[in-house]
Structure formats: structure tokens, C-alpha cells
Length: 364
Ligand SMILES: NC(=O)c1ccc[n+]([C@@H]2O[C@H](COP(=O)([O-])OP(=O)(O)OC[C@H]3O[C@@H](n4cnc5c(N)ncnc54)[C@H](O)[C@@H]3O)[C@@H](O)[C@H]2O)c1
Image (cartoon, rainbow, N blue to C red; front, side, top):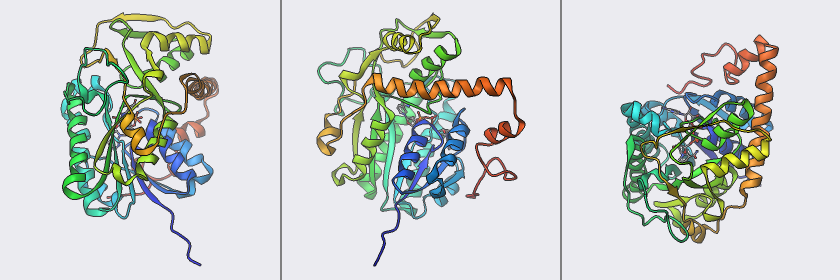
């Protein structure tokens, strides 16, 4: 009797917010997962430690590498059936401070990934996470069901340019090399394991501000709106695309849609109500590249795959709160009783003791 071999997947940025959630879901589904990450984002080591703690972690392989290294990606892509490319410089603000770094990670890094995929894993499903920022400032509030894929590209800010150009490369490698690629232009995603800061991951950033009694800055009038999508719903969309042959070479907008649209001030109020804590708000000017209103029209994705978001904002915020509260409690406990062994383990992201911090398994 023949038994089918497990699926094999590579997740770049697999120790990040979306990457660690997807990796956990894939491991639970019996997939052999290679995480490829340089652990540059604060919190990524903690996410890795969590992945190592899962009962399914025997199917997890961790490659500490950088997408700016084509040789590392070539080795990581070998024989993969699914490639999820999330590794990125993720903030508009940082891209303005260091546009070259943003370019090298987001555009050249994606190019490296595509070349590695077409040479080492030409039959693989390749998913790229793009952004609503590719549609530019959008000064008019979106009407009807929101912004669809027919909206002209209007790349703005180094981050918008690097992600937008990478988005086009991924799409075109589907056309010219027949790569089974798909692009998700994502609105605001939130959920557990999001290490939100002022620069990126604003829902989690507000949650941590409430729990740690820290002030938040509101840039602009605070009435800017986004449609919010809970991370498990995003992962369901990725799975729907993987199993949909017509999705190859296509671009899709994804977010929570009009019913899950909230303003910055509404989210602050929701978090204050949920945590029972008042958040101190400070006022700043509008930031470069900030859209006043963005709502995703997800009709194309829904019609092609049958996907739709299932987690309401209230439920999603509760899940984020439960995770963030536990994290903050652990932080407080370890501040009171520092344990060198535990601190050492956490700092090393669960990498085996004695191994160099940059590689659990060398890829180059
Ligand atoms: N979270 C959102 O709301 C959102 C919205 C639109 C698009 N995106 C895109 O989704 C992807 C994942 O976002 P996220 O929120 O999980 O971010 P994240 O910062 O939590 O995860 C990104 C991961 O990539 C890693 N990384 C960074 N530079 C790297 C490099 N040079 N080589 C290897 N690894 C590197 C980081 O260490 C981190 O673990 C990104 O491409 C981002 O642009 C996210």
C-alpha cells in the first residue's frame, strides 16, 4: 500500500507575525516546513521559540538566512512544493530613512527568491504578500465595496515602490516562466504574535500601549480608516489560492472588507473598552504615504475561491488581547525574577545551545 509523502513548504519571514502563524497552521496540517528568516524583527526569536514548542515541531526546519543572499535562497528552495515569501522590510517610515536597504530586501530579495524558485522548484506554488500601499494616497474614500484590482498602481514611498515592483515581478514570473505564483495585496492584518510598533502593526501596537501604560501618537486626525483582517482568515485565503488552479499568475486584494472597517480612533476606543485601561494619546502631523481611507474589495478572491472572512473584529481583538496580556505578564515576571537560563534560551530563539546564533542549520 503506497502512502503519500507529506507536503513541503518554505516560509521566508517564517519567524515574523504572519509567517509564524502560517508555519504553525502548516505544521498542524502535516506539512514539512522550512522557515527562512534572519531574525531581524524584534519578537521573531520569541515566535521561533513558540514554533519549536509545538507538538508538530519535528516537521520544522529553521534556516537562519537573508533574502539578500541568492545562494542561501537557492538551497532553501530546493525541492519545495510551496513557497510563501513574507520576508521583508515592512515599514514605510524605515524605508524613508534607508531606501537602499528597503530596495535590497524587498525588491532584490524578491527577485532572488523568484530566480531560486524557477530554477530549484519550478512547479511550486509561490505566494507573495504585497500591500494596499501600491494604490498610492487614494485621497477619495473608496465607494461601494471598496478598492478592487482594477485600481491603477500609484507607487508612493520607497516601501510602496519596492513592494509594488516586487508584486509585478511575481505576477510576471507567472506569465513568462509559468511559475504558479499569486499575489495578495493586503490591507491591515492583525492577531497574535504581531510585534506591533508605531511603524508597523498598529492594532497590536495600540494593544501593547494599553497593557504597558505607554502613550500612542496619532498622526493626522485619527479618522483614517482601514479594513481589518484577522490572521487566521488570511491563512485560509492562502490555502484557498494554493488549491485553485485559476489563481496562477493572478493578483488579489484581501482584507476584512467594509463590515470590518474601523478608524484609528475607533480601534483605540475598542481596546480601551476591552482592556479597561485608558490610553494616553499624543497628536502628530500626517505621515508621508499614509492613506486616509482604504477598504479592500475582495470580490475577485471570493468568486474565484469561495473564501470569505469569518472572524469578526470583536473576536479577533479578544484573541490578540489574550496573547498580548500573557506576553506582558511574562515580561513582568521575568523582570522581577531574572533567570539566566531562561533569558539565554529566549534570546537565542530556541536555537540549539552551542550553535552559532545565525544558523540552526547552515544553508551556505
Ligand atoms: N501585517 C500587515 O498588516 C501587512 C500588510 C501588508 C503587507 N504585509 C506584508 O506581509 C509580509 C509579512 O508581514 P508581517 O506583518 O508578518 O511582518 P514581520 O516583520 O512580523 O515579519 C517579517 C519577517 O521577515 C524577517 N526578515 C526581515 N528582513 C529579512 C531578510 N533580509 N532576510 C530574511 N528575513 C528577513 C523578519 O525577521 C521577520 O521575522 C511582509 O512582506 C509585509 O510587507 C503585511
